[in-house]
Amino acid sequence: MLPTGLIACVLLHMAASVEVPKLNMLDGGQMPAIALGTYLGFDQNGVVRSKSKELRDAVLAAVDAGYRHIDTAAIYETESEIGEALKMKFNEGVVKRDDMFITTKLWNTAHKKEQVEPAIRSALNKTGLDYFDLYLMHWPIALNEDNSYANVDIMETWRALEDVQRLGLTKSIGLSNFNKEQLQRVLSEGSIKPVALQIEVHPQIIQSDLISFCKSEGIIVMGYSPFGSLVMRYGLQFPGPKMDDPLLVGLGQKYGKTPAQIVLRWAVDRGVVPIPKTIKPSRLTENISIFDFKLTPDEIEKINQYNSNTRYTIPSFWQEHPNYPFEKIDNPVKDPFKKD
Ligand code: NDP
Image (cartoon, rainbow, N blue to C red; front, side):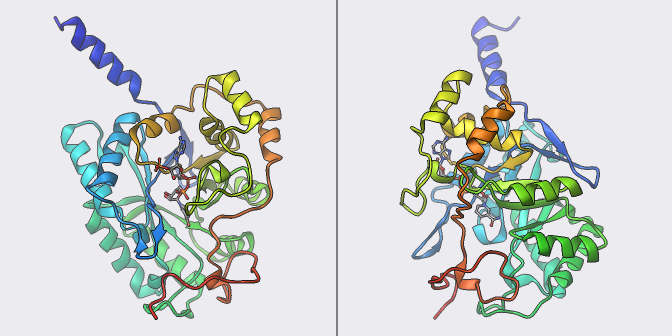
């Protein structure tokens, strides 16, 4: 017989792990309805790297909390620590490979058809995995090694993604940061339909048109930067609702949730897979504890009213590229990736 303390401990552990629902993808696979974001940001030295294995530890805690979907990208430089954490969780027997859904992305400097297979193999090597669940073209922007614009058609890259899927290196393929016209082109000229489109979605950019179009095509929308103005970005506060916003606080009181959870649930209720990033264990649990309530259509509509089509990810340094997907701005910033 197990001692009472141990039983309580086991029950507590079970209760702490959230069961995340899954969405059906049009190629027959299933995607967990929330993903852990793993981009640690950018500073004057380039991409921020994980310190003292903080990202590995966050992924370990995330798996324990119930996350089954991890979002990464070659450019984030987090693939190795994610792989390390997964290996530990596989060895502990907490999860098996097919319990997990791993999304990663092809970077812009590897768009030529002969570069795509080596790029995904390199990412697999870093993670120690045999396959990814989802491989996305990160941007419709092809660059040369020195970050000058490369002349590679998006269909050349897409066909190479189709090839790596056929080789079994990824179960599914999709796109990120494509606008509607670019997505339509892939749909009409490609042999395999993208299963997912990853774009910026939060209360300041609700993306209604692109989301309805994707829904009509059976494509899942993954929403990045899901907290919008609720959190600081680049060390700054941007206009828009904050954590003390009366509507979000009121809905939080009604459902016993925080404003952050209300905004994540708003995404889920619109059929969007949110990708919240945190490395803090308490926030990991907070962000995934959103599957025991639902907003009403009227509440969703009220949050939609915060829309101002404001993006936080505006790589205006690429705006003269022929495939730049967004609206151009007046004063483009200097390319942080470009070496002088
Ligand atoms: P998020 O909206 O996830 O915001 C992250 C910030 O919110 C961090 O500062 C985090 O701090 C804080 N935070 C997290 N949870 C809470 C909480 N419950 N309460 C208060 N603060 C919280 O934005 P990101 O821009 O990081 O996007 C998320 C993910 O989307 C990325 O990690 C990446 O995987 C993906 N992405 C994809 C892009 C693409 O081009 N496809 C572009 C941008 C992002 P802390 O860590 O200290 O908890």
